[in-house]
Each structure stands twice: as structure tokens, then as C-alpha cells.
Length: 197
Image (cartoon, rainbow, N blue to C red; front, side):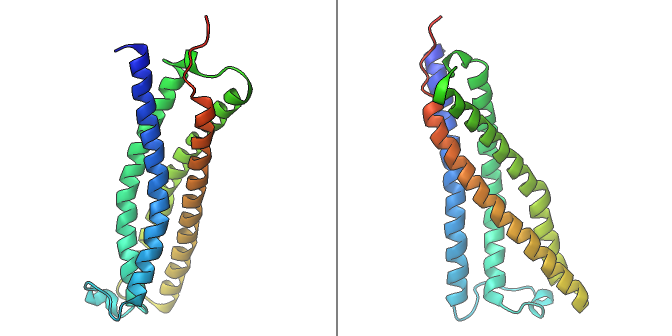
């Protein structure tokens, strides 16, 4: 495979992963809002709430919407990690195999540094969300709706859930902004013209 063909292949994978990740997070925000709105507008929630949980659920529609969105997020995370791996491989290729095509001065070099830093930060945020925030949300949900809980345990679980949920929303927003800026910076940085030797 020629250098130009390999460059185009890496670029295609890079832009596909970056666009898919950005688009998936934007779609998450839209689908979460639509799911909660739709479930709250139904006269009765669709689906069965387990009997041991039903007594502790104040708003069945919101409970069901949360369960649906939670499942969507679990599947989204698989896509996010796939995109992250592709982006890491592409950026590593940019900085090694194709370093001769990377900018060496001016706005393009600054844009290249910015995009690499932003993509690294997004992967770190994804790690925090995957291995700290999401497990915290799930544990709080189990504690909140489990059986044989005291009022103080329910209150503590609700406060924990709210804390993790708010943090999750902030992390998603940060990822959307960082991925968007990384895409714009990439347009300046990835011109792909080899430097004269």
C-alpha cells in the first residue's frame, strides 16, 4: 500500500470515528430528552416494573425512561470506546508514520497540538465516565430501588444518584465541546501535504 493510500485510509478512519463519536453524543442528548418527554406524556408507562421496585417508584414513567436511557448509554459506551481506539491509532499514525505530513509552524501546528490534547482529554473523560461515574449511577440506582431500605438509605442513595447523574451530564457536554473543537482544529492541522525535504 502506497504512502498516499495509507494516508487517505487513516484520514477516512479518523474522520469517521471523530464524526461518529460527536454525532452519537449529540444524539444521546436529543434521545434522552425525547424519551423522558414521551414517557412522561403517556397515561401509563410501557413495560413492567418489577414488583419489589414498584412500591418505591414515585414516577413510573420517569423510572422507565431512566432505564431506557441507561441501556442506550451502555451501548453508546461500546461505540465510544471503539471510536476512541480508532482515534488513538489514527493520531499515533499521524505523529509517527505520517509525521512528515504534520504541520511544523504557525496556526496549523498550534491546531495540531490542540486537537491531540483535546482528543487525549476526551479519552480521559470517557475513562472517568466509564469506570467511576457510570458504576456510581448504577450502584445508587440499585440502592435507591432495592428492597428493605430505610428512609435514610433511600435519601442517601438518591443524593448519590443525583450527584453522579449531574456529573455524567457535565462530562457528556464537555466531550461534545471538545470533540467539536478537535474537529475544527483537525481541519487546519490535517492538510496532508508532505513537507519538502
